[in-house]
Every structure is written in structure tokens, then in C-alpha cells.
Amino acid sequence: MSIGIFKQVLLLLSQESRLAWGFNPRTPRRFNRWFKWLAPGLLVKRWLLISASGVLLTSLGVAIWVKLTPTYRLIQFTIEVVEKIAAIVPNYISGPIVILCGVLLILWGQTRSLGSITEVLKPGGDDELIDMLLAHRRLNRGPKIVAIGGGTGLSTLLRGLKTYSGNISAIVTVADDGGSSGRLRREIGVLPPGDIRNCLAALADEEKLLTELFQYRFKAGDGLTGHSFGNLFLTAMSEITGDLDRAIVASSKVLAVRGRVLPATLSDVRLWAELADGRRIEGESNITEAKGSIVKIGCTPANPPALPKALKAIREADYIIIGPGSLYTSVIPNLLVPEIASAIAQRQVPRIYVCNVMTQPGETQGYTVADHIKAIDQACGQRLFNAVLVQRKVPSAKALIRYAQENSYPVRLDREAVGQLGRRIVLSNVMDEDENTGLVRHNPQKLARVLLRWYGRAQTG
Image (cartoon, rainbow, N blue to C red; front, side):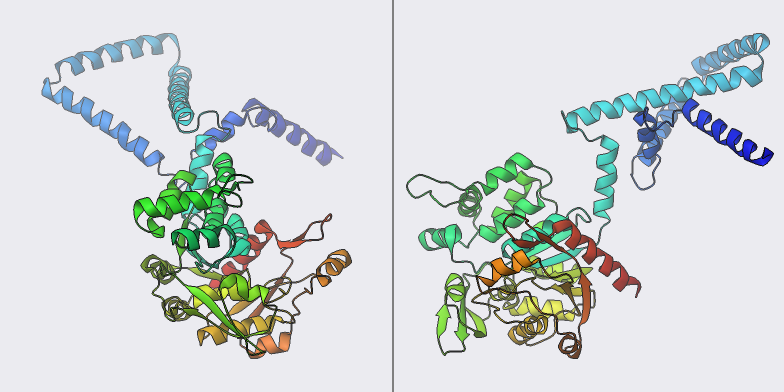
């Protein structure tokens, strides 16, 4: 019993001491912020120390220059004052008090200075400067990730990845010829900006208003109906800067993009597909609408040159992710650029393909996971990845009925066939389902978390 009482007393004392020193989690967040500044790797403390050393050296230089006369008198005066204080108050009391006052003044001065800097850098913002610095350092230390694809699948992936790394390069297809992008492509002759716009918006660093502006689609107006502001903006920037690549760089600065968005090629690429019934369909939007079974896919020109920045990103990548997205119209078009496919195949880093959750009518009806892998291998003529991520849980009955009406079904995992293709299987629940509509989509956070977890295991394994 006495031991139990003793433990309770110690617990109470520890709680009281934490309250006395300001560690109460309900009150002083300020102390927590101060201690964050002691975290290693911020590149702040070393510069403050260097600045303090500079002040000391400057003072010493001035003292030497004036032959130490004022300095000697100041030291003598200080010694006399200290001796008088010590005579009145013992040194074991006065010393700690003076040290405490000095430390408090330093902390007060530094926090006020940093607070003023924060107000300038983030006026009206809720984030503390220290939190911004910590996040910046963490993201800059993240792995160099290359994500390859297009459509909504790639932008969904990027929304999740940007919370783990700031070193993201998204390589995006420019084969789109439908909707707003197709109209701009036909009328003005620019490369389709739609998929690039989606990726820029996905990587934007919490610029909510600008992102909404970029994604805004006009609902009225002669010639404007159906166009998104971002598509028109990128088209105008392409005309001003000379090409789409420079336009993307300029737009990335406006949106404070975390990472880079790179077109796979700057060539005017047009897709074609040969169907099982003998038809040859040209145009990305026409391939899906043909509702046939694709046996071969290619592009015109046959061997478009890759964007040099895209090749450099692949060569420097720590991690390469292919997909998710429409197999034949979003993922494979990037890989029809021979230099990109070869660069991926030569890399000995973790490479994974994110398989779609549902089959897509007109592209992958009846496809299994192995069929998706075979289609990529056949289009590229070589193996580009060593693992495939597959959704573990099947959608609800409501979602299955909804998709069945559109001739779409879950992509079946045929383990044995995937194993024969030499791919590892990563099974996880990375899907979200809308209870009202029954639509299923990859969840950005779940998807990124699983992919980064597998990357860590692949690195250590």
C-alpha cells in the first residue's frame, strides 16, 4: 500500500512540475513552438550562431582598432558592478538570476523577430513559421518520385503524394483530343492542356482560390462554353512563352506547385488502335467510343522524342509509379515514347504499376490484372515495373449494380498469371466509394500511404 501511495505522490509531483514549467497541453502552445526550433536540420540555429559570432568578432575588431581603451574601461566598470552585486546578493543566487534574464531576453527577441517574419511571409495565415520550415525540410528530404499517367487517376495520386515529398515529377500524356483540350488542339494547334491542368491543380500548395480558378469551366459565352480557365491560361502561356513546357513552368509559379509537371513529349501525338474486329480507330476520344476490343495501340508519329526534362527526372528517380488511369488512353500513351520506356526499364529502383479498380468499357472490358500487365509489356516490348498494386476489397453490391449497367466490373486478380509474369502483388484497400452515387475512386491519402510504405520495404528488402 505504501508503494502505491508513493507512486501516486510522484505522479502528482510530476504533473505539478509540468504545469509549473509550462508543459500543460491545454495552455501554452508557445513552449512547444520554442522547443521545435531545437529540432535538427532546420538550417536556422547554425545561421543564428554564425550571426552571433559575427557580432562578437566585430566588437572584438572595434576594440582592437581603438587600442582596447573603451573596452578596458567598460570591463573595469562591469567588474565593479558585479562585485557590488555579489557583496549584496550571493553569487549562487545572483548568477542564475542573471543567466535566466539573459535567456529570457534572447528567447523574447528571437520569437518576436520570427513572429514578424511570419506575418510578412504568411499574412493572416494559421501556420507558424516553424511548422512551415519543418514541413519544408521534411518534404525536401522526401524521395524523388516520378509518376506517369494522365486523366483523373494521375491527379488523384499526386494529391496524396505531395504530402510525403516535394520531389515529385509527373510525366503526363499529351494525346488527349476530346473536350476542351481537343477543341483547343484543333482550333489553335496547341498541345492538349487538360491533363496537365489537372496535375498542376493537384500539386498546388494549398492555393484554394487559384486552384478553383484554374479548374473553373465556362458555362456560357460564344466559343467559351465547355472550356476551363486553366486550359485557356495554359494555351495563352504556350503562345507567349513559345511552347507548353515553358508555359507549365510559368503556371507552376503562379499556383505554388509542389513538384513538377512534365509533358511526355512536345510532339503533336495522335493515338490509333487496331480492334479485334479489324477496325483501325484514330484519335484518343474515338478509341473508347468505338466500344471494341483493342489488340494493338500506337501513335503518329511512331517514335516521338521525349522531353529531355522527363528523361532526366526518370534517371534521377528513387521511385517510379505508373498509373492509375485509363490503360490505353492515359497510361500507355506515355510509354509509346520509346526513350521514356527505355529509361524506365534501365532503372534499378522500385517501380510499381497501380492497377485500376474497375474495368473500362471500350478499353479493358473483361480484363484481369494480368491482362493489364500484358498490355503494357506488349506496347513497350519490355518489362517496366516489378510490382503491381491491386485493390483488396470488392465494391459494395450497390456500386457493382451501378457499374454493371455500364458494362464495367471489378478487375479480377489472377494471382498465378501475375506470378508467371514475374510481378509482385501489393494488396491493399485504397478505394473510396460514394454512398449516394455508388462511384468508386482511388483515395489519394490511402493510395499514397500504401505506395510509400511499399517503397520503404522495397528499399530495405
